[in-house]
Length: 235
Image (cartoon, rainbow, N blue to C red):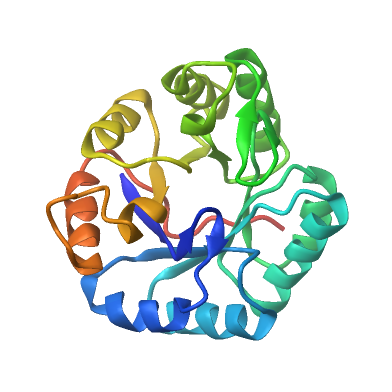
């Protein structure tokens, strides 16, 4: 599977994200992301540029809760030129904003609420939505499996995999904090996962102190499953 390192804690981009990126750029993480909240627009632009200049793919995850904030985040994503936009639920409007941009859009299936985001919804709903998202041209989805409030997380992953079929890519975000969870996600059919807080707070490898060590251990644990395609876009 692929590991997407999120420069985030508690669902917000860390304020010193530019310095952190310089600290870890030699580790070899090839998928790096951030949230649409936590820092200002110029910082997001600079961060995105540095990620892409390093040869990594850039991701922005939408955790804003209002419709207008979500759409503004999609406009920002297009304007600063990220590679992939994740999250949000305003499918039609976001796809319209991104049309022709080459940005892959991975929406949230289920019923995400609040910030930090929790996920409502049944496996049946997730499966149905994932099938519809792929039919609309989305390359995949961003599933908050371990934030689930109504269903078993791995049941949601398996349901999403059924809905996406072989074409769609399944990214699992939120509360992935151990090698055991990574192995379980791979077995259930995930293509990638995100980790932010568990790397920053040292909980992934609690006997190690350096952020670099956390990332190296996460990369080692991720060495299973097919991973993401290097190019996935809509429009």
